[in-house]
Image 1: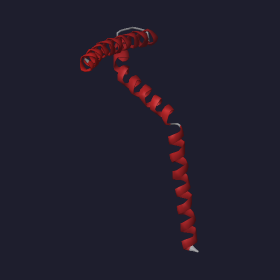
Image 2: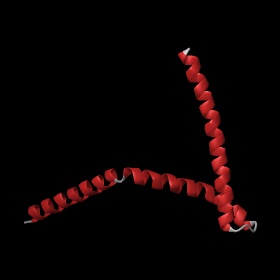
Image 3: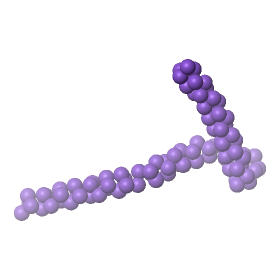
Length: 93
């Protein structure tokens, strides 16, 4: 009796693990986006807190920090893509 109950519990755990694996695999694109958004939010929160401590409304502080981060990302991407394009053109010729 004990062996049958243990086997039933073991197969139930195996099915639960399989179901969880399928769920994570199915929603992996969404999970990756959520993790990236969480990382960005946690990374930018100290700057937003600093601006709110200085008397700025939180919505405006978030907008300013978001625009600064977006501008820095665009500048970095522009400089990086220019360097890569020069490297590609020089390697082709």
